[in-house]
Image (tube, rainbow, N blue to C red; front, side):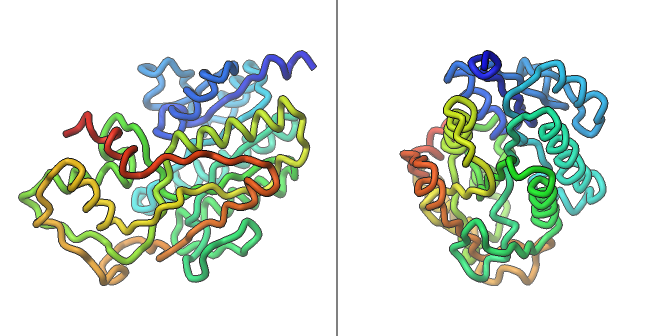
Length: 307
């Protein structure tokens, strides 16, 4: 039992927006935390690891001997995904396969962070056992990673989350904060989607869910903490509505932003119109309730440094 009192977690993609939050939350909770990252490892005091190099990954994990692996690393920008299909597929699918297999072999609790983009958005809200039908390569890769993860071990856990936002190092780190870039650039007219409903979800809340899942599974030894769970913000906005909120928070002009209601005609990558996630399983089955932050308050704090 001594290994469990040690409570050690390894986080992939620990230099990314979500990975940073998850890492900090576990450190605050007194866990032993190892973050691995690739391009931004040095400045964040993380272990440099190329996850696509399985020998390297294997030796780091065997060295750390974690109780939990939280797999946050992924190519998660649908447009970037299509531009580098082979590398993106390998990262999202094959790396997941390798980690899930190693975790199963070493009896490590494995959490895969997945996405609402596994659904087509035609029939929300989606429950965990609804059949996915992804519209784009990114969603397909995550669905494939889910299937592999479940096939490898019934003990593994998949956490599906929608559009995430939070404290960023640069505005283009996520889809909500990047809107400020468009708003501030008043010389360029830009069309912004006012059709697709999104559920912006604060990274800090997701990190809290990950912590509670791990504490239940590792510290309380609750064997039912596995399978698929959904977690999502409750407020819904289109991209255009989010931009309006951001502009009004900082009294910025928004005449150059045009509301686009013809989504789908001129875009490269299809996205679901409304992939709302039903998150009741998390509270009903595990008693996990997160007192969620409000989008307006939190996005303001996140963007303040960039005004």
